[in-house]
Length: 286
Image (cartoon, rainbow, N blue to C red):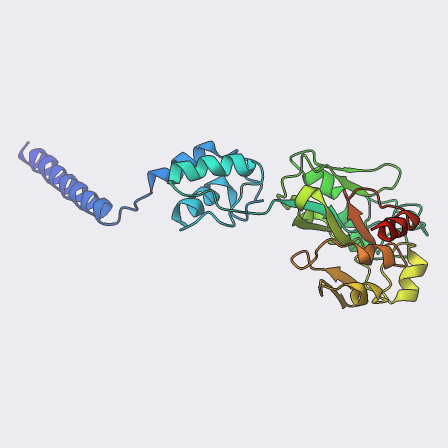
């Protein structure tokens, strides 16, 4: 009986000692979490799309609370209204962040980029890209299998059945970047949505020499450099036989669009151009 009692007392003492050690350790190594992180996370959409640049909504909430300013931070799903709510919780200004949009940098439709063979494998761009260059003479262009469509959680991108090219619905796109990562040809890019949704960009990623590109696609960039010379703002550079427009420098003057012999530069959501005759008459009257 005495042995049992001694054993029970000993075990109880050991348990109390361990409990005390665990308590002191928990107090000493406790990690404090700002309660505002949970408040911000609660109003986030929990889409965990990664469009904000952080690993999920929890990571974005943590970054917002710990940052000195909300400038440059944006939840693409919630938009400016949600950022205003977050700023209210944190007692800060909402900050500024330009809304981004996914754009497709390939105009190689069936009419512009004739097929030279037929792909009869699994309907996946990733698989097709690993096997060969594609069904046309351009090994850089869109494969049209729709990997970008399958990864979009917002129903913002679809394959046009006539052109076999992906098209982005501006109102639905959250710039999460999922389609950008899914495209094995890197023809989808995130760019600023622009004032009044107006944008100018080179819709081509072909890096072949001009003669090869022209043969493969009627609207491919041939690297002639005319656009570079025409730009007064040094917004266009040439590299690897391909023109590139820096959206930070571009003033949307659209001179490059008019002068591009291949029509490889796209202008979106601009008002119709006046005929040259009307422009001349207006200048004379002025």
